[in-house]
Image (cartoon, rainbow, N blue to C red; front, side):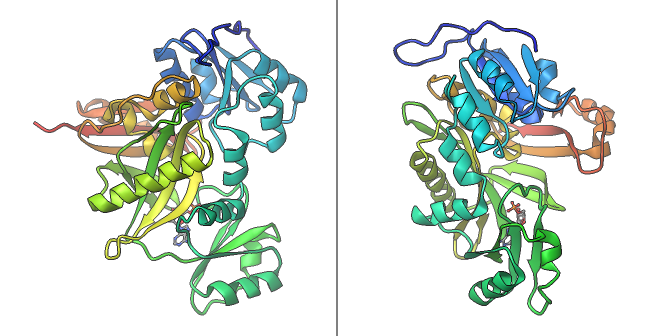
Length: 370
Ligand code: AMP
């Protein structure tokens, strides 16, 4: 661990002034891009991550390589920073509890608790009158059979915790035998969700400040390939009323969680009915918000830094028509073609091994109106 002195800049307004230090749990590309935005505003970052050579280490002032259950190292880390944030939602509850003893954790533990478990997430959303797919919990085959009776087919089985990019998920089609679903969920706590027929997937990204102010980015439209985000485009091809509805829902969620920071809400849209169904929450900056770096007046990363440091939020308007494309695996090796395109903004996450499907970087095109 390298040392960065903790600043003493917390004023009566609880603002952490530029010069202060932000602690980030997680050292992937999201942590890296938060650290880059923080540096622009004059903040230092200290990354905490169990993996050696994490992408965020390359751009941070300090880092700690230690396990998330190493209570001594966590305490030292939290004492050395002014605020702690995270780049992934699976921060263990005990980790969150320890760091929160020494520095404000933003977003707070409630956002983690709700979003780490698909059952508590959907229950929370329904309690706040936000539409989700119908759902029922199960763990055993008998419980799955009852869940199928209740929800019907087609349906999607998902493990409640730790699933991402389609991992731990199984589609149950109309006439299919359901026994093999247990090969995917393996007896873990899971939920069965009704299959939502939708025309497009969108993200509503909002930031909520310590003051309670909320700023929403324009709604972005996402295309996934093999369950991994391939492209995001802005503006999304949705009606104005749908855009407004999506922003209102995300704002309501942020308020209900008394949230501080950037929050992403993934949603399914039906064009004919204008129905907006929430799929899941990410209590953090998100891949579908990378377009904001060059495409919005304030990037999602800067907005997150502003929110967690108690600063006012920045403006969120889009600067044109924007496309963001993920560079997965060996796509990153095609860098010359992107450097030869004057309209491309190229991002490399500093990862060494371009494994298939691994998020290695992204490119963004911004078309401004003439
Ligand atoms: P998730 O891990 O929940 O984000 O799901 C990954 C992808 O699977 C989503 O982006 C959708 O394309 C699809 N999906 C997930 N849940 C459902 C559902 N209930 N109905 C239809 N498609 C779904």
